[in-house]
View 1 (cartoon, rainbow over the protein chains, first blue to last red):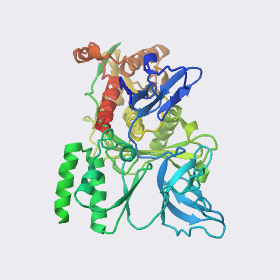
View 2 (view 1 turned 120 degrees about the vertical axis):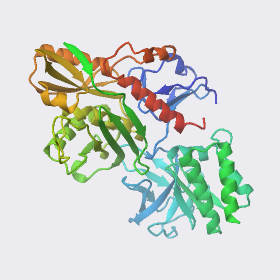
View 3 (view 1 turned 45 degrees about the vertical axis):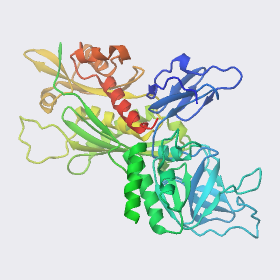
Length: 246
Length: 256
């Protein structure tokens, strides 16, 4: 990531033109927290750190929040509310309209063989459709390959709520170097066996054979998030919790 | 007309309520207000608007239940806050702002036995500012930040004096009380007045309030300038808002 300067922006602040990437080969992409006011103004709408990526010719505002607003392509953990004639109604964040999950959006699902999900079941899914005038739609299958790619029902385990920013940090390709979260590697190093699925909607699902391990992993994640722990504090926390396991 | 102020520096804490999407606690001029913001969430059928979000403001007094006065403050806040929130981004949804008054200054001249719900205009800036801070904490998209202040015109020794952030005693003897809010683009967002005043007086009030709300944010080199405080008239609200948010963003992005 090539970022030179990361100024704090408040909503409505002017952005100095030399912070706006000016590649001519690629169109400028605006990420979350920015608004384009025609003809040429770019205005932040949330308080955060302005981040510019000159290679990708993109810019966005990095900030933390609790309310998930769906965006296409996001991986999320949704809970089935009820089943309709040909789709499931699912909840992706509390008090928002349900997202729809068609019965046929599963790997090798047909009208006759479709997964039977009871209300309350959890699915790991991708957002396919998210716009402001319609309820979001999610899927558990890749449209191009027809494979599930790890999406689908999450059996057993527990779900823990974390802040949206922490979920994004966990989902980073290099979460250890860029996101500064090491807890998962550390917990694995302590000999705990668990599976994990992180949803961008601020939910983390932890599965495994041993309920004790699940609880320890979930607690570590939540404490790391709420306490804003650095790498050293994370190591200390994992050592303490792992000691309690034995 | 001379200008004076009675208040101390404002104080704020963000994210005080763990379960709400955003929250803020703000105290200034004797008032303490806690706000929670939730949204965008699903609106009730009767509040649903096909093209924009419904902004719901609820004001709860420190004691007792809200009455007509609170409904009045709510309606004023609702109309000015929906101007800065990007309501068109979230059609058919609801943005709920709950403002709980925790503390209000006491009037030393009147013996109030019972803390009755008696809200007046001098609490408006505190309510408004808390709501803006909570919206920032929730990350609700807004057009611009805003700052608000109250100014009272108090008669004194035959002349008139304008008081920024008036105390309850000032409000009691004031001829008129004004509440003004400005966006960070120096646009007038809210102007409410009660009492008798002339156009000239209102113009003076406008200038005073604009000075409190819209003082230009100093550049990084000029940080020490603020401490010298050449303007003695009222706190620098815009600078306060920025430094509060700076702290919040710095603690959120500690890992960067």
